[in-house]
Image (tube, rainbow, N blue to C red; front, side, top):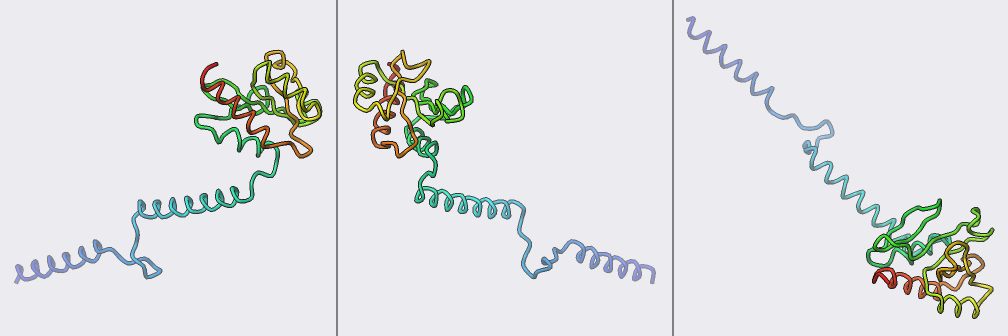
Length: 174
């Protein structure tokens, strides 16, 4: 009789142990997902959201002159932005090819501008051709840099060409 009680007791323990070890479904009725699966789903949602925002931003275009300048400068391979002297500068091979001068700083002269790396001959031709749009910037002007006002409907196609030339000069190391 004692052996029967032990056998019955062991059977009960086994059933109770089975109940404890079986996974219960989630309260909502769905099977429980692993943390890794949840993280992967969350990452996919975030990536989709970021891609959608990026697509909307590309369609809308930059709203500010700095945003437009940033879009032009960072479109080149290897170009990156570094904040120097309190202003955004755009570099390739760690050499500046364009610098933003905000209207609030003493560099901008009360108007937002961009300083573009160039050579003396090109600087002279550009400034003489359109003195209302281009100027010789302080500090770097004697080295051939061109200053361009980026308020009051600037000539973005001209600026893009000048910036691309500056990028190529710095990329090649000249």
